[in-house]
Length: 437
Image 1: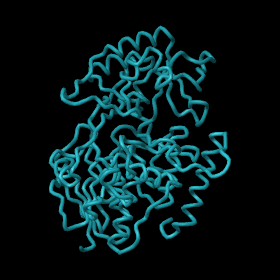
Image 2 (image 1 turned 180 degrees about the vertical axis):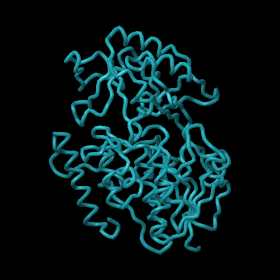
Image 3 (image 1 turned 90 degrees about the horizontal axis):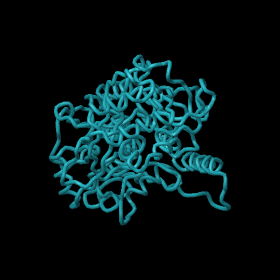
């Protein structure tokens, strides 16, 4: 087996893995089917496209996603470096200009001397080489069938959704205000306030709006973290007030009081020309999105540059077929990374891509695999997707899966999470110095 690796998919996981391998002197053949064969969710032909949102989640050590980001930075993640470079205002979260982010990664990888880019769909998995399958939750039908044969198992799936985006100039500035929730930030979010009458009218139109029908033969399995806003609303008239329209932590400067409901918009590009509707993932028909979301105060004349969509995400039964090194138990030279493993979210895709890339390098050089304990956020997510369980469902980073502190439990959650993060960083520095950048 020569020191060449085939990577299928130039999404977040595939891009990170390709970089890790190429930087270590390994020749990589990076296959990406787009734009020859596109998906219902992707909009560009760039690598590492952020499909659903421009937010990578919390970016502080009191947040499990923030801890995972810090771990990625410690391990020299290319994608985290670029994300930090193109971040846009988002309070305590890390949000990026998704166009500049993916363009920079595409440029770096296409010009790397150890990476050969092949713009084609790879459907037959070569068994005589080391292969990383990072084809994502929207894997093509032909490759899906090939993977199914390898794993001897049926695919699992759930439905995911994306939120619409409007232009900044089309927002009525007289009706909205800038403020971060609990003032945690510099007022980066645009807030569209609603009184009770406006909310009730919006709610009735939302729950009765026409949706795009799903395939009749499929059960509607929805991922809670990206639940369509109309489905959240269908659970009860006040459900949205504790979800994407919650007014808590916001004070309207015009009235000096809390609004009945608030829709938040987050900057989507570096220049601040586009904003996405936070928590407004949807499966409404496009005409209905324009009609219903234009009822939101401040968005009456909004120019929608992208409407929300919903798509089917597939993933393998990782606990049954994968090792902690992220390769197949039955075929050790076949690795998996990204959302196809059932690790959920952008940051987990980067993390599994980074770990798969490092472990492929170690395999090629007869080194021990890099396996992190669940003391770390990355180790915890890999343990979750590879440890046998009865009902496997996608999950993103959270402190519930990270090993708790020894000794007396710290009651204050913020203090406990910060202590866990401090322990994680020390654990990595003390035990994995050869990998820390």
